[in-house]
Image 1 (cartoon, rainbow, N blue to C red):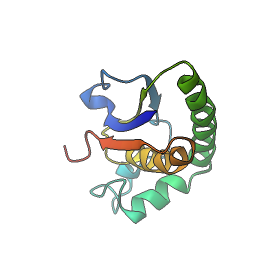
Image 2 (tube, rainbow, N blue to C red; image 1 turned 45 degrees about the vertical axis):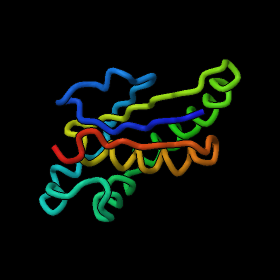
Image 3 (cartoon, helix red, strand yellow; image 1 turned 180 degrees about the vertical axis):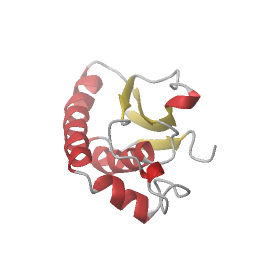
Image 4 (cartoon, rainbow, N blue to C red; image 1 turned 60 degrees about the horizontal axis):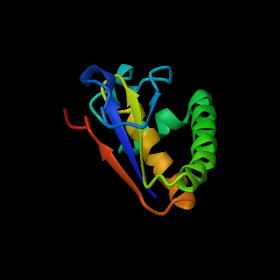
Length: 122
């Protein structure tokens, strides 16, 4: 099964082709840290900030648990494609970090995992 992970910004709208949508706007926001504002979730400093939160670790763990249990069931039902979208306010920080982390975890469950950071450079 092919899994596509999409990071996006809610201010630009939810990706219409999503099978599942998860909201990260409750996690600590790097936008409000001056030194991180102009960086994105692919940079080490933003990644460390986002993943340094206990709430982020818990949410990510639960999300990985849910998805790794769901993927085999989707395959059994004959589903060949799954699009999972993860959003934050602007699509540059939190959602990017979580999509990158989800890719690592889901590659173990399903080898074909692709990512698309829809709003990263807006």
